[in-house]
Amino acid sequence: MEYPIVQAPMFGVTTPEMVASAAESGALGSLSLGDLPAEKCVELIRATKTLTDKPFAVNIFLNPLPEQTEELKLKYSQAKEFLKTFSAKNQLDVDYPNYEDIKLTDYHDQIQAILAENCKIVSFTFGIPDAGSIDLFKKNGTVMIGTATSVEEAIILEKAGIDIVCVQGYEAGGHRGSFMDGKIPEIGGISLLSQIHDHANVPLIYAGGIYDAKTLLAAKLLGAQGFQIGSLLLGSAESALQEFEKDRLKNAFEKDIVLTKSFSGRYGRGLKNIFTDTLDDSGYILPYPYQNKITAPLRMVAKLQQNPEFLSIWVGQSKTSYSGASTGDIIMNLIEETENYRLNNEG
Image (cartoon, rainbow, N blue to C red; front, side, top):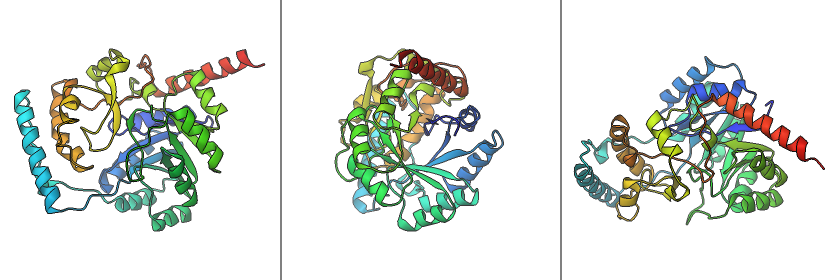
């Protein structure tokens, strides 16, 4: 890339237009495919290719799927009844899916689609590809970027042959990329990046709290060779967020940003609201991706009603002005600010 800036793959926020704008600026655009079906992945990849001939990354979720058991089916039924009561209490007309209607995506199907579309950069979160998939990527000459939220995860990624590690600090917005069993690591980005740099021998991208020259240069000093920005782009012209969501971000305070499992069943950092306050201590949160699937209709209704109290609005701890400029302009402004700061403070 011309610049070592990575536009974060933000599922539900990133658009082909955002990816293209980032790529055209000389940075690395990242198309978030999440757990979309393979045919939808192909559609979005091709849409992005019509907007830019520059390389871009594609990002997929690798979360292990929970075993389908009678216990899970019962918990799903109980969670559905809880959500129906909650919706009615808040005057929301939501049609929640039945357990049998939930469709899960096998990431192997996504990988086949990515290879067929000859995408040369792939990043992933929530897990690590199996050895066969890693071998397929290597044979295709695909650069692989894995997400680590701990030193242990970074070492596992390196030993598996992953080319680049994206170090996700605790302050980063959106879902935690953790893939080890147990409680998610609660280590701040500065400490985490420094320690991973001391233990890993692969290039590092840092994600979490970068929003200006000083935060970018701090990450560089601690060993990062690439710098991923996400929250900085939430208000951009190409962001999929609607104006009422962008306004909610601009009016939020530090105390409004929390970690929650309420929307997806996995921890994500975003704005708290009526839904997170109710669900987080309810005992009715299903494992990912079932929680994500069952709450999707609620989020759709809330978006149609422009009601942020029942929406997942992901954001990191570093608040910005959430500029409405184009993604490319925001990236170039960051680059220019960083260069000016560095030149003015040399020596």
